[in-house]
Amino acid sequence: MTSSRHEFLDGFRLIVPILIAQTPFGFIVGATSVQKGLSVVEATIMSATVFAGAGQMLALEVWDEPKAWLLVMLAAASVNIRFLLQTASIGPKIGHFAPFKRWLSIATMTDPAWGMSEMRHLTRPIRPGFMAGITIPIYVIWVTATAVGAFAGQFIDDPARYGLDFAFVCIFISLVLPFWKRSGAVPVAASSALVAIVCKLAGLGGLYVFIGALAGVAVAGFMAHRQARAADGA
Amino acid sequence: MALDPYNLLLIALVTAVTLATRLGGALIMARVQLGLSAKAAFEAMPVAVMTAVLAPAALTQGWPEALAAIIAVIVGLWAPMYVVLITGMVCVVLFRMWLP
Image (cartoon, rainbow over all chains, first blue to last red; front, side, top):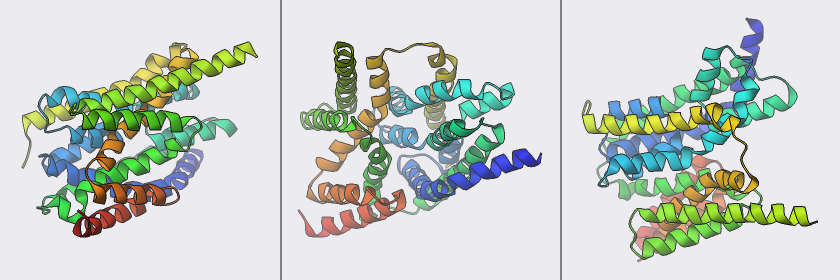
């Protein structure tokens, strides 16, 4: 009992700074939800069931487009695809969990839970308490912040007046910056940005995101291919 | 207020897709051996998508948005999200008053 409490506190201590950072993000997702026509209850349900900020934000962006059912799925899939790699990597490392705890940990995977668990695994086995100490506080804060943001958002008539329409850009800047700092990311990001901007200016509608992203992904694949060839040749 | 069936449908779809990406990794991807290029392409997807969303939204709306976005990027290199949010939003409101 005591050891699992220790594990929980270990996880909790690690994510306190992330909790503070995530609170305003939750507010904005809540406020954006009501601007896009969701009720406060619906916005809260969405955060409680989806539990993935970037995916929610991107889905909300296309919420009021025609054929939104297809676009929201594409939007959510396109940024959440990173979970595929995260749970593929963590899954085997938590094979010793009881099945319920294992699948619950996987179904609630987040970037911090993944990152911290990978780090933990370098020095000692990951325990369910450790992951719970990360995920439970994030979940509580995320859902609460969304509800508060949605409630407050109801009273904002003109979001542009407070720069609220620009919060979307600021949030994606914060989310993407750590990725930009990784090795090899600059050519990927630059090609995505360039192609997306050209497509947007060419009037391709919502397609610009997918064509831009495709360009970046192609560059990443091509770079890895060339690197592998160079390594073989040497 | 309350609950709208259309909104609930979209929420269910986003939930299903998100859950599929989380479970799919442990169920399928852990068993598949990806080639180097395919793995790199997969790993690049989030950054490629986020950049493709961000760049046009930041740079094609006008001078106030573009300048505020550049400042937000510079601030974001060392500051946490809430600082980026506040700086970006304040800058865009001010620039919209002063710039075309």
